Image (cartoon, rainbow, N blue to C red; front, side, top):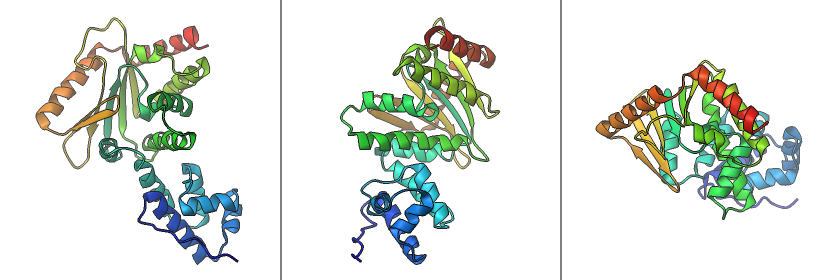
Length: 275
């Protein structure tokens, strides 16, 4: 039987995850084929995970965690691994987003990443990062979708989203992609901790016109603001600037449609443009 290829767990988070999978698998006396049988993939796929040549998606990482009785270790490592996908300024924001007790977000021209479906995210990322190989695009999509777990836990943050009406009309992909995305927003709005408003076309000019803004309330520190544009982002922590951005968000909420009317507008847009 050939010996296992050596691993360097210091090379990356994917390599560290792979080394932990191998160590736990070998502690149980299992071969890669036996672990693959437990999680319904081939032994070659387990080898790819352990060697970090093709890191696992979230579902496979979770299945491996259960099969190896890892008590969440592999799932936690997967979460940290996906953050490596992002540049420093995004990673810093995501670390704070994961701890937030309240998230207020506004996007002018597209649905915020935290609220995107897989199809919408894939097309958005492909347009924004056209140089990506398909395999790396898969990782980027998986990393973006992994953030949705923040809204699905036992104690999710309160989320208030203001969407510009332009985001409902700016077509991303086929009609079916937009229909699915708007349906997803309506489904999210049924949760008691999630509220949406739509800023209509006739709303007056506002301080965040053309951009995006997110405000995070943290349990162990002051609020922070996050501004994002094409290939750039800024995490704002200075209290006076955060206060100004919080006031700007107040103006957005005041000029946006009430939540019930916003949901009706989303439904009407689906029927009129994406049936």
